[in-house]
Amino acid sequence: MIDLSAIDLNLLVAFEALYAEQSVTAAAQRIHVGQPAMSAALGRLRSLFADDLFVRVGREMKPTAKAEAIAPQVATALNAIRSALNAPQVFDPASSQMVFTLATSDYFASLILPKLLTLLKEQAPHVDLRLITVEKESFVELLEQNVIDLALGTFANLPSHILVENLLFERFLGVCRLGHPALQNNQMSLKDFVAFPHALFTLRRDAVGIVDQKLAEQGLQRRIALTVPYWFALPTAIAASDLLAAIPSCLEHHFTKYYPLQCFELPLALPTWSVAMTWSKLNDRDPANLWLRSTIQAVSQDLEL
Image 1: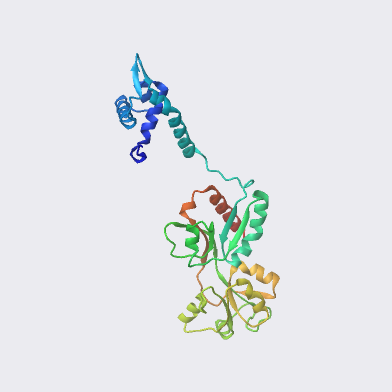
Image 2: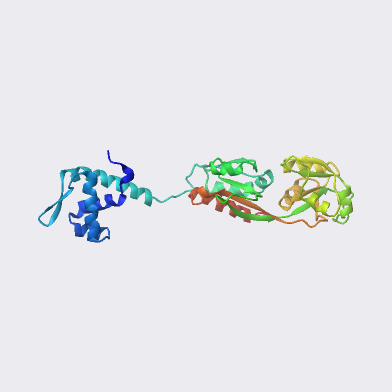
């Protein structure tokens, strides 16, 4: 049995040309190599198959019985390789029945889903979505294993094979119930901000956020009376108490429209941050993943911030 690892694919291309042209010179011209290179290829083919393969008869190189026997199989194999190399990767959202899985937070999902579902209805009516929570410890592995197609959120220290694209930049706003005693003319002093109890969103099961870090720089500390792992557990809790909280500005419209809440500028200088989309480099050129990313990007650009 012939060892495939020892075969140069170019030899089969040379065989195909020789079989078609029945001339060393014409075969060389067909595949754009010199005549000496084609003669050398014929010598290697003869050694590989232990057969002359092509014998000069008059002005032509006639195929032997061995060459006639293997020619159809060589042609089929080469055509299969050409088809694999040339086959265009396409994704047709209108007919696709793919299921995409996104890892994202509840707050960002609430922002993009209305526009995203409308767009899917128009462009990809048979595409389904599966949303899961972002697990910071494992989302990279989930991307690598194709368990999820994209992760959406705030990320740092990503490995080089995980690609990232910013979707929008966020900042914190304060939120409290309507008529909160600490709010005067829609403003809150740092003294009152620290004096009242706070609610904190956290996935780390701790009670320290960026607000606490900035307060500590000024020798101040707030009381965290409530921690929640869900953004949408905050509105009802804040509306029914004197709790204060810092929320992403994206949530302002939803919180103040559906709950008796009002937002205010925080009496602290806090940095902005980016909400980003991440995916595996393994899927960077995948047409379906490309379409999904461009769709998420388009939806994010239309958000009311």
